[in-house]
Length: 280
Image 1 (cartoon, rainbow, N blue to C red):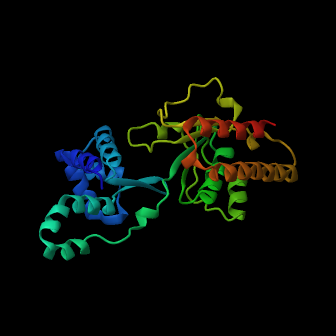
Image 2 (image 1 turned 30 degrees about the vertical axis):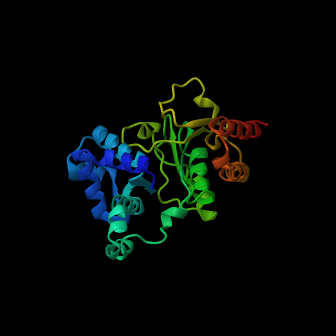
């Protein structure tokens, strides 16, 4: 570990609230806790909690993982062990007899070493009942472990369209957690920060979108709304098949992009190219 990284971690912990937060999560182990549960246990306001979680996450001491509708925060135990090694390496060098004791605290490898950073992706449409629901389910499968998928709408319906859920279920997708919801759920202080925000309908043009932060790369992939299609049941089924296939192709390409070698503008261009392909 570099001295700069150790300094950042120690600075993040040099705050009584953050120290209490870190100790609480350390006691939970790898399972972690949701933000709401953390706030309740520590008696913190949502805005204050978000600030302290972000500080610990930036320092590399915490990781956030999506589980269904919730984001769980857990201590990065391997990072803590690296910090301990950095702080005690001179003691071990001066007293070789204690080196084996310290080594037992430090595994040779940790699963986190091989983890690929995950991206948060939010799909938007008006009702959040068909296109964005499909996109959420598809990316959850093709990008499992590398992408966290969400969807929302500017004027959400009461529930996803039954035909859409039936289609997804028939193709083996888990539909138990899919629901129609407002994009406002992703603007609060405890909302997960988005890396990508992709609009799937033209009707969002002219509307004032919420501020999803400077971090989000935006794109537009306009697709037809199944809710406005009035053909026969067979024609409706065909449209859903085409919609699913269109999203699947683009999300497979999106998920396979070499993000590690692309800068922000290059990623934006790729998103726009996929949107142009939809329009064509």
